[in-house]
Length: 286
Ligand code: OGA
Ligand code: MN
Image 1 (cartoon, rainbow, N blue to C red):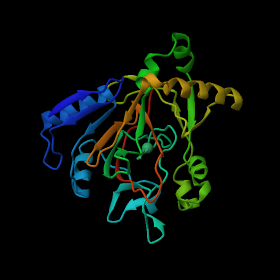
Image 2 (cartoon, helix red, strand yellow):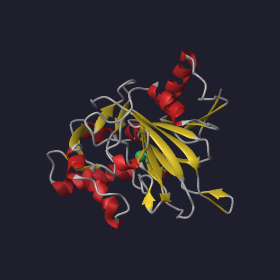
Image 3 (cartoon, protein in one colour):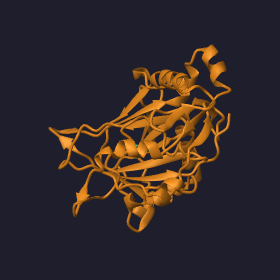
């Protein structure tokens, strides 16, 4: 197994490891340490069945079943299909997942520990792969805040929600509508603005454009202005890693340490097909 860091403050690549084979505990520890250091890692050249994808993901914890049940892989509810592919007139997955900065499942009480996204088909135009994914380090964002702002933020909590974002994304009706029953499973939640990583204790700035829609107990306009200032800080160009996909990439990210955004620079009939598993996390704390 070879490890190479990206030039950015996050991101690393692992080659020479076949995840279809069992991973011994020493190697697994190295992987976890790398994840906690770099926030996002790519395992290149993985040819995995659904079972193998799920089995490796489970090493990190229990897996979540996504609320958008119409986008789950039939027979494998742990796998969320992220795809623009249309079959029999119907989308087979989430066609427009994450085209805004976000951290997966930050809108639930126990936000996800991490996600593992496997590239099965990627759109190619003139020899170039499109549909890149951008990552920003929330840990680096915290580290580089002015001291005064760190102190001010240390007592604040923010409000995260899924329903309003889903509707924003669904204006074209591309996704099935979420039922009231589905929506009732994702009420708004509060998280500390400065959050500690549940395993390493590292501090991160835990607000994101996608799901964080207010500062708790703060005037709406004032809260929005502060949030916008933090979003801009988190996504400064120097804090970004851009993932250029290859078929067989299994990309894993830590949803506490980083946030991400999909780039939609391709259109049907170019096909993009990704499978995601989502590892459960614990309640956030300061
Ligand atoms: C996700 C996601 C981005 C992408 O699967 O959680 O945000 O580029 N995907 O597909
Ligand atoms: Mn996502």
